[in-house]
Image 1: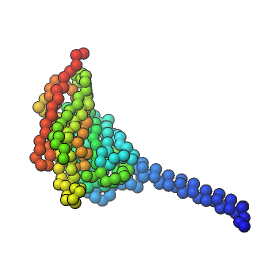
Image 2: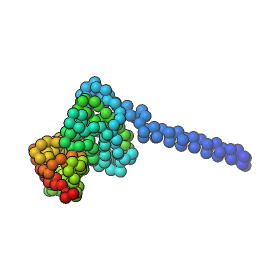
Image 3: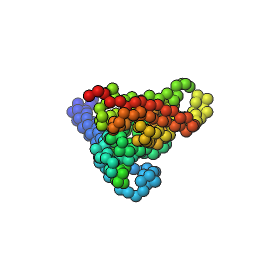
Image 4: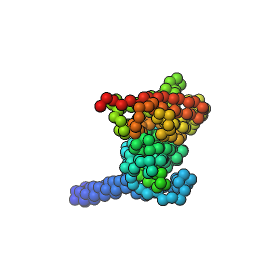
Length: 160
Length: 112
C-alpha cells in the first residue's frame, strides 16, 4: 500500500512545477508579443530596408499602428496607421511603407503623399503568410525615417 | 470567377467643411491573386493584382500608392484629404494585366 504522505507531497511538487512552467511560458509569449528578440529584422528584411532607404537611420516614434495581436483571418489583416508628424508644405510625410518580414513580398506596399492630404493616416487590409512582425516606416520630405512595428500571430497562410 | 472586377467605390463624409481634414475611403472589386496558389486541378493560378493607385483632387495628384499582391482581395484604402476646394476626387487603380479602373466623387462643402 502506498504511503499517502508521499503521494500528497508528489502532487504538491507537481502543482508547483506546473505553475512554474506556466509562468515561464507566459513570460516567453509576452516578450514575443511586445517586441523582444522577434523584433530584430532578419538579414533579408535588412536588405529590403537598405535598398529602399539606404543607410539612413530609422528611429522609432511618431507613428501608431493599430493591428490585432492575433489575426482571425490572415487573408485580411486590418491595419490602421496614424502619425503626429507635421503635414505642411515644407515639412510633410512623403511616404508610408509597409514591410512584413515573413511574407513572399517583404516590401508589401508604399503610399506616397503630398501636403494636400492634410494628415498622414492610412487604413487598409493586408495578407500574411505566417506570424510575423509588421513594420511601418514613414519618410518625411526632409529625409527623416520613423518606424513602429507590431508582432501579429496568424493561423493559416493568407497569401492566396 | 466573379465578374464585378473593376467596380470602384469612393466614400466621402456626408458633411464636409472648408479646409477640414476628411477621411476618404476607396474600395475596388478585384481578386488580388498572388500567383502562389493553385486551383483544384493543381494548375497554378497566375498573379493578378492592382499594383498602382493614383489619387487626384481637382486634377492635381495628391497621393500615389504602389502595391503588391500582399494587399487583400477587394482592396480597401482609407486616407486623409485636406478639403481645400470643391472639386472632384478621382482614384485610378491599375493592375498588372493592364486593367485601368477609375472612380470619382465630388467634394462639396455643406452649408454652414
